[in-house]
Length: 279
Ligand SMILES: [Zn+2]
Image 1 (cartoon, rainbow, N blue to C red):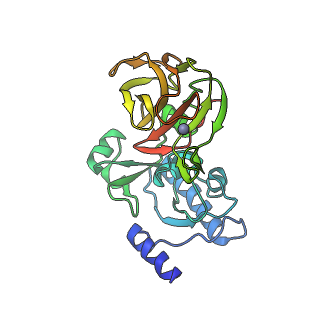
Image 2: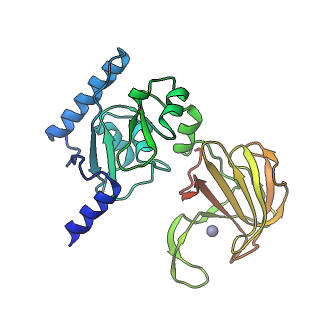
Image 3: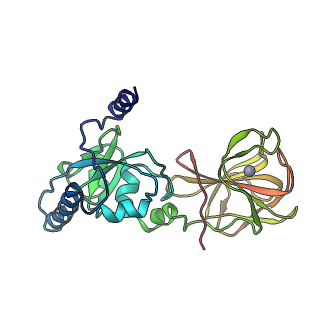
């Protein structure tokens, strides 16, 4: 039954025909083969020769982390993060299946012709990412500095100083005592503490939000948003541009809050992710 479910899952994902990289051990000849292919393709790309793109898949094991997979496969941050549409370097859990190309590059959604124009390359050198409709792999390309910063959490500063009173992830709901998914982090701080923009951006929401109380949402580049909840006073207007560190509100305990704190969320393309900060 389990095998059946797994194969249905892979079929749905459209990666059933891709060979599985069984382990990241250097004694695995398939891993060494992959590492060689990556080096050869990089060399070919540098010499303006066509590359031979192949895909493998790898099932994340307990103890694996992003950097381990990256280093062992001879790839770089953006290759693994973008083909697998990861929100951050911490976006993995055992059992996740990642796809691994044998060339460095980045994946982007769009039309082939538009992507070719954007990246000043030929349509023939843009490849569909298996299992992801509309996602294409552009060999040899790298993320812009800003996108790398977001991915590593280096783009955000702490919006308020204080103690982390509740982390992102599964926790006991302070009201119902039932397990729930905490979609952000809570930073305990005295009522009226200055809440700062975690990164530069534009205000896209101010007002009351059910559960969150008085809330501000900022939009940043690269599809990122930050949310600030349980506020006492909002000091910005919708549409306003803010710089990182600008005071946007005063903290409070409005909405569903047991005590004074800031509830802070990071969203990437609509998906909530675990917040990480500089330092
Ligand atoms: Zn919270």
